Image (cartoon, rainbow, N blue to C red; front, top):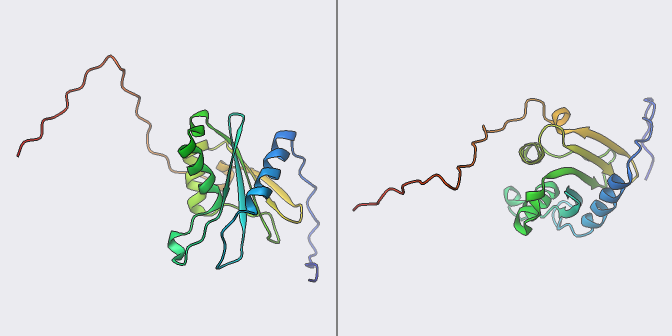
Length: 164
């Protein structure tokens, strides 16, 4: 395969912290588990919740609308395993692509809701290129419903009676 030709200077390599490098390594392992039987485009993700890392990979369906991306798989797995209560701190995503792979719009929205505008997103490819951005940079003006305060446990609420 011929190397891509470009006149643009190559950006300086992004320096990752040890926890970020650990997350990228985990995303590489997750990518190997991808179920991409249609596209062959395997994507891995690793999300850090507290000190725990949750893996995700893309899972394709013959009905493309039922396909799930690696980033959302990691978030959903964190909820299913109870790890999400620790708060999403950062996520890494990797694919065999010419440039570092970026989360799709649906994933950006889910990540915004889970980690907020300051969430660090580490985007990589299998060639070693890395780009780090915040969710605010990836999804300016992200949507979030207003948060309601949890009701106090001392407050009594009356459950309406259903009548036929």
